[in-house]
Image 1: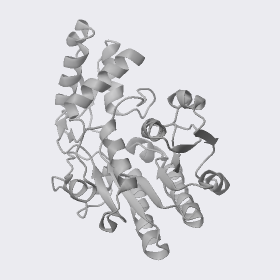
Image 2 (image 1 turned 180 degrees about the vertical axis):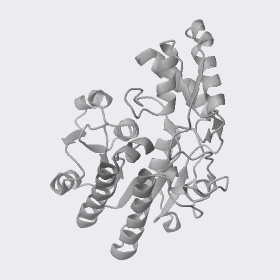
Image 3 (image 1 turned 60 degrees about the vertical axis):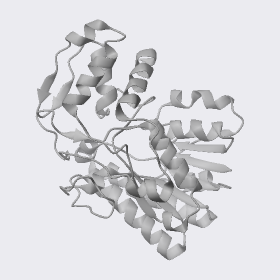
Image 4 (image 1 turned 120 degrees about the vertical axis):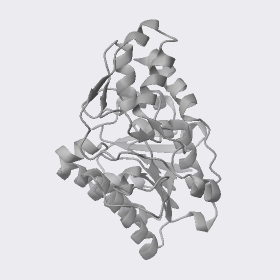
Length: 320
């Protein structure tokens, strides 16, 4: 099949492109390299089934060009990061809502078979219930969270109004190979790994007892492929938690990272941990119920959080 991956040079998108190419599909990558990196897709250029379109989802003509002849769309392109959205809500809104709507419209117009998009656990907002179940959400706590919830609303309307098949995957703190450790909005795991490798102290926001459902990249790729291939109509036009289903505190996370990294460098065990203030817009605890994905998609996570962390640490040690 011919498959479009928007944001295909990003962390999740490039891993998805790699797996789709391995499975023999023709892959089109649309990316403007605002957060994606050319080196993430460098190895694909020698594959005749891979095509890169340098373009922006905010530009409707780029979107039209990208969906030409496409069977399925994986929409991964977005501006992530809660702090980034608090600092610059206008750009986050433009990319995550205007760009999303552009992609929905062009996908509708060419009649793609299914539109699978990156949703977010941030949609749960101030809901205190644990574990997070798909049909119980609270009020968003950041501009980023608002944009990802609006994506779900638009996808629902397009499925109801135009008969499109849409599936949203609410990602929970995804980590793994190719996740960028650099920049002001780097995710916590690659950021902490790079600090520790350099014998620098990671800074934990708050007392370190905030918890997250950290989810290894291969589980996320599995969920995307299941969302593309599922035939059961009951499984379509809905959203799924995309997670492992366990929570880990930031204190536990750092402890695991130090343990796994000391296998490569014993000095890392001596690096101190620093605590800073809590971060604005952060959700205290995040834990997913994955029962819906198990039931309707046949999802069975391939990697536990710890096993995934060992793989990620090994990759960073070899590539940083």
